[in-house]
Length: 256
Image (cartoon, rainbow, N blue to C red; front, side):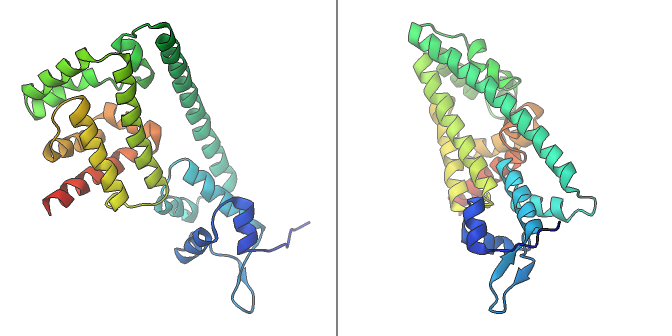
């Protein structure tokens, strides 16, 4: 039996956890246009609208931007079941990745409690191919041996507490940028540029002097170098490009 129930925008906001303002925005950009309206012009959502909203929110959870989601949903070959299967596979991979990170955190916690200093290999094993030491050659080639020497000197001096702080700060910046991207914020927005500046200062503080010019070069490597790219793409699809664009916007703001 076909479900002919319709719900108001307030009902849908309560069910889904998104705001009424967000639903209005989705309608405005054509991402989720309610199937019906009352004579007074109030939005009414049917069952198919709710299914579409569910899919939108799942894509958002996976880090997709609104433009990307719109392209997926407007694709003539789009099928709901196929999309759900794809989303499930991506979330399963993400869960597996998070489980790896949890295990690494537990190892680090145990080492800290026992006063054991983990080796650099042990600290960075969870990040797979992304090991800052592997990129020394790129740093030396693009800028100067002085930056490389400084990076090595600083890394050699850090104890477990300093490494934990450095990793936490870097992770917070990457996560913050991923959240902005998922929320549909432009990479040139003030919020994204502010985080890009935090990224520059993080590199400058923990590894080597990082001018805006050096940071722009790093941003290009995040996109072009498969190892850097894979690191950011594991956090959220499209994040490497988003980070690069925010870095470029940060440099432009300083130069303006």
